[in-house]
Amino acid sequence: MYLRLTDEQRMVQKAIRKFVEKELMPLENEVLRNEREGKPGLAPEKLKELQLKAKEAGFWGINTPEEYGGANLGHVMQAIVLMEVSKTLVPFQFGGSADNILYYANEEQKKKYLIPTINGEKKSCFAMTEPGAGSDTRNIKMTAVKDGDEWVLNGEKTFITGGNEADFVMVIAITDKERHQASNGREGVTCFIVDREMGWRSEPIHTMGPSTPASLIFENVRVPEENILGELHHGYKLGLEWIGYARWVVGARAVGAAERLLQMAIDYAKERVTFGKPIAERQAIQWMIADSAVEIEAAKWLVLNAAFTLDQGEDNRHLASMAKLFGANMGNRVVDRVMQIHGGMGYTKEMPIERWYREARLWRIYDGTDEIQRLIIARNLIKGHVKLGQFI
Image (cartoon, rainbow, N blue to C red; front, side, top):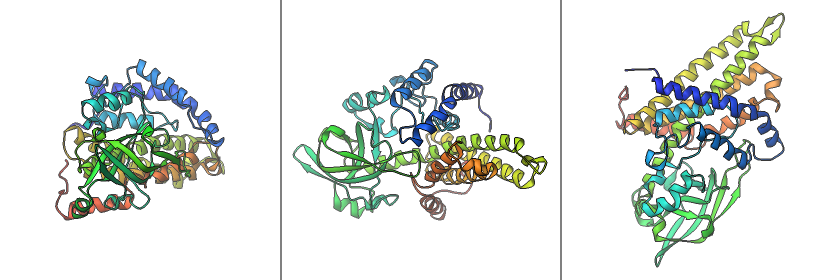
């Protein structure tokens, strides 16, 4: 058992870290200013410019198969990259990638959707959540009714990340109501690839954080038969695969942000003097720093284990839930302590702490709430689907 990064992984980590420190962190004040003025933190053209710089440095399609021009570095490397990129609040992501379930597309769909998405020519989003069906996916109401060689979609999806900018959506809808009810929601739903020009519209949802998800409205949207992604009536499996991947990714982002925040707290604590001493010498401050460091390391190994398990071709859903649950809560505790250490300055919009504070609160909600992760973890153990210690 080897609990250290390989030389290659360490080399990539250092290169990503250098890119983040040189190209992204200097933009943080500009991002904060733009967001205060109600503008996107990073203009689309600036994001594209940064992605091209990253591509020149060899960072394109981090986890995209080589046949599509990607680096195919694996999920552990993906976790490491996410941890490094998340050390800045600049809303950046490396180009050359696509949603994991889009690889289930047939050859024609790959030409029309997968490859343009990888090349940055199209933007996608995934839509399962509805106003009355968040984590309870069995309660989905959106329908798709067959009419000749087309399906007619009606319903609404909500809190969809990237929904305002997407050119097409991979959307889950009921295609067989009886089958859906009889299977407790696990069958009778299908995933459709739906172009925006087919008629759906998006409405922005304003939140307390920097992101603006969307509601997607479908009113008699007609979708051709050839736009079914995967198998008819078996879209639920694709939904689970998409969500399962997204969960440990949340944990990775939380680790990266928490490491940056904790370093800010350490640096500030050594500079801030009260009653003749730096506050770093105060036990109350030291304990907050120590507790944060321990929790960050614990979350990091949960994330890396979930990613490693996926790289082995094994089912990592249980570990992904653990990484998401602990990582998201760890991130919230750390940013709260860091704000406390900074005092009033941490609460101002002149520093990135309050911005991370608002963003971190979302980590415990999207891609499965804390309560859902606890339900999944406990159910797996009680029913014997997972044995204690089986992943070591």
